[in-house]
Image: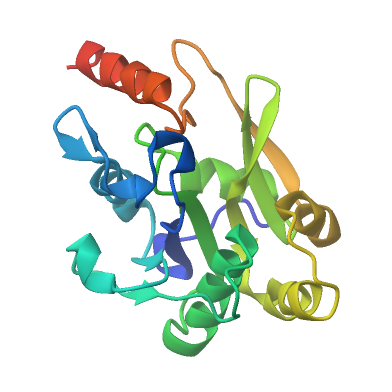
Length: 207
């Protein structure tokens, strides 16, 4: 049974297309928390765990101000996070031949665990995908996915019009890997001003 994946075999994909409606709109990853952008914190946490990192986002890539590839949705009409997963998988197949998996995370999670890739790979085993969970709740956009899932995902999006991430995790046979949520939830995502304040407090307390 496969219990781990070397970093070179994993392409990190940061899903940076959120519209931040509950925080007034705009790119959520560009919001500041404890003096740094959410996106930069996600990049810092993810980069040591993978062979390379890309951003999944639409529009002008220059607004992010990062020296990373910015890959747009491969499908029209902004079909949501699944399009970002597909963008990552198809980019890996075409541009990162050593990558056998993609590791997806949202841009608004500043406290991602430093063992995210290794624990997901160990829990995944022979399954095609593994997603993170904490506090009795799963986080389906935080996952390790075989790039061989790309044809299935494209079929779901195009032929079936599927947009629900959990529908894809079910079809992919994803397993769940749990993290403790004490002393804090490592998958805290910043959706509201209250979430931003909570992240600020946690980061300040860890200094």
